[in-house]
Length: 138
Image (cartoon, rainbow, N blue to C red; front, top):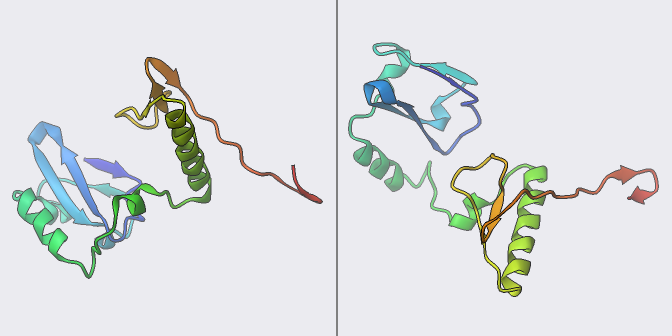
């Protein structure tokens, strides 16, 4: 089982799922030093196979040294500046819609063509970023 883009998750848990054999491998992000992982039964990563997921997650929850408790808002705020801009614009849009008596609903699948639903209307959001120029921003 090959998994890509697995690095950069320090302080998090990664769950690798193989539906065909009903297996889950639970790996601490701190333990991953590569961008790709190939998991095979009996292989080097198989030591992370998780048969007691609820116990594993409870142990993680109790380990505040490596997994400090944070608010939902903390984790809902993106890290990259571009995504922070989009997030800020989305929050502003949601407030404006609420002030107008409308409700924005986020689809359960992210990264698709639809960013929000306003009633039955599908919406793709676009956020502007300031572009630097010699004499300021345009």
